[in-house]
Image (cartoon, rainbow, N blue to C red; front, side, top):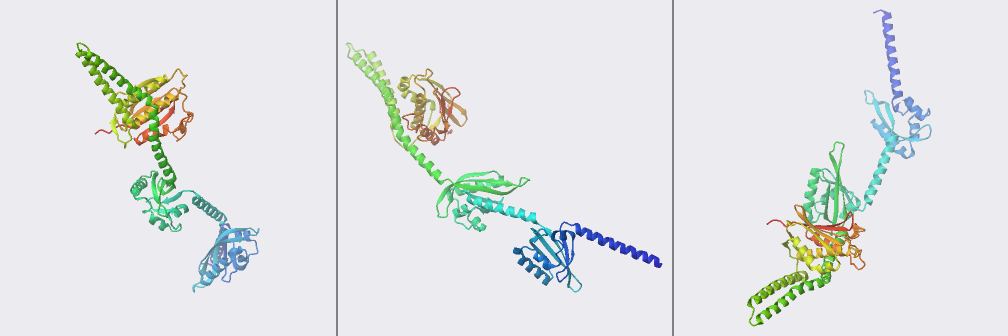
Amino acid sequence: MSNDDGLRKDAAFREHTRNSAEFALDLLDNVPGHMWSMDPAGRFIYRNRSMDAYFGNGLQDHGAWLERIHKDDQRFVATTWRRSMDAGEPFDSAHRLRGADGAFRWFRASGRPSKDAHGRVTVWHGQTIDIEHQKKAEESLRARSVELSLLVDMVPSNLWRLTPDGTTTLVNRRMADYLGLDLSNVSDVASVMDTIFHPDDADAVYAELTRCLATGERFSMRYRLLRADGVYRWMSGRAEPMRDQDGNIVQWFGLCHDIEDQVQTTAALRRSAEKLARATQAANLSQLSASIAHEVNQPLAAIAADADACLRWLSAEPANIERGKRAAERITLGVAAAVEVVSRIRALFKHQPQSRAVEDVNRLVYEVLDLMSDEIAATTTRIDLVLDQHLPKVALDRVQVQQVLVNLIRNGIQAMDTTNPLRSLKIVSSHDHPDTIRISVEDTGSGFKDPERVFEPFFTTKGNGMGMGLPICRSIVEAHGGKLWVANNETLGATVTFALPVASAT
């Protein structure tokens, strides 16, 4: 190889080296961050253009760099850097740095030592990346987390969180206080979940919760929960699953709020309604006394007349045995009618434990109308009957269902103005559903101004009413496993309907 060839190759190598160095420097100047190198004494050997642009030209060594660190971060950074320098180990720190404009921004600085063959550090290479936006986002999330935690603890209900398999991972402060648990100890919370439900409710709660965890359906039920003082209180609990974008359940959120006072109030109201039902039963029946007296008087008057006729026929000369016999037969029929009337009266007045028998509701309608016939006649009210002659029988307490019918019929009559020429009351029995029968009483009055309130105890539209008629009727119907509701008609008046379950076949 000639000397000229060697020179040309050496020049090409130098040109390649120069181009590579320029390329590397250009690369370092354009990376998104501060690139730097320091000697073991802490003097900057290299700073890229981005770093000089941020700090200015006054950054000569590590000491000047430390002065740019926020005072609240200086001790930590200096200690961390010195430890890395002494040990020759990598350095990493997040702290605030002041730029040439005097403003501080968050950066993450990391440095790595380069060592010679003997393990001595010859140079430090590092990078400082702006994380201001990341820090602000973290602070925003942290503040939001604190706000949400505060809100969760302020909610006047017990809140909790479960894993997809049903493990409790979080409860709010209110629930922890209710259970008497340490809020910070999640395992403490999870350990008591098997013992906090009332023994009579626990199996049903676990079964329903297990079903919902398996199917992903909403959990909702009432149960009694053990308080820290050993008292069980009624709760209304609900839980909803949270799903990821693929529809997989990632966790469950639930709440339960105390309804003990509501349950006790409802029970007390039910007891009061039952007492009032018994009291108003006598009051309502006293209003029927005239009708009952009329019903009793009719067969007794017939018996007296037939007995007098029988006496005359038998006292005649000669005695008319045939006529006397027919009169005696009529007396027997009259006695049977009187016995039936008296039996109905005894059933209405007799106070005894409730007993239910399978009855024909249509027959009860006829009996009540018979008892109320004088009252109905006095108001010139026309009764229209539309009764399903194939109505299934119902297991019921005769006295109570008669009381419901009396109340509804009387309410319908009283709802119609006496000057209204269209005074008519329509009573319908139907079997629209295989499991229930329906009875409706439809009047042509003014209807209900506030249908939602008619079942409130002591709410009445009558000047002398107690406001207990419809609440008691509904209580009786619901005690039979049925429902009672009201609705205004499209034209005149209102309709009150109740449904009762059909007697099961034996």
